[in-house]
Length: 142
Image (cartoon, rainbow, N blue to C red; front, side, top):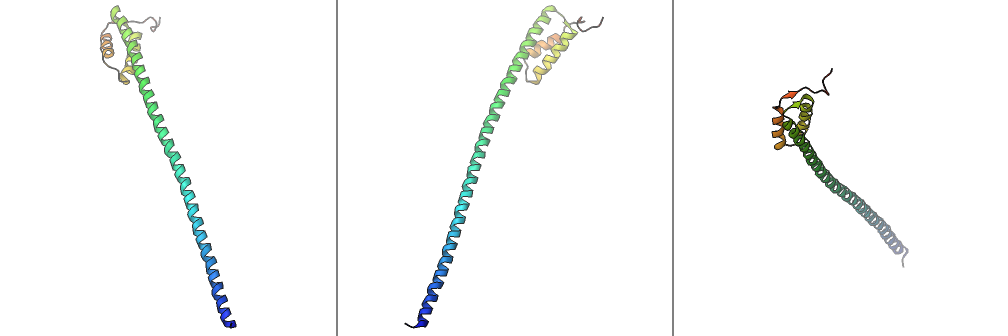
């Protein structure tokens, strides 16, 4: 074999080896980047899922708090109605109302009305507003 031919084969094989190594490095680098991207995407998707779960829980908590708020509001209306009803019954039976009682009744009725109360509470309040007003010994100064 001729030395020139051997040099050519060595050159061809070394170039093929160089390009083969270069191709392998390139392929490995691309594969690494794809895996890295997939892992980052997986982490982001897991975070997104956590946030989505947090938002769902938050929405459920808000709805539960709204329901509790509605129940408390209804309970307050019921208590205020009862207080107005009992007080008005007494004032109407007495046939008069004192200035302090009228002031207290107005305060109760305003809260009752602001919470959405109406009906018999309003009727009784109106009747008590028309009662004769007497002085209140607890309020008036001597």
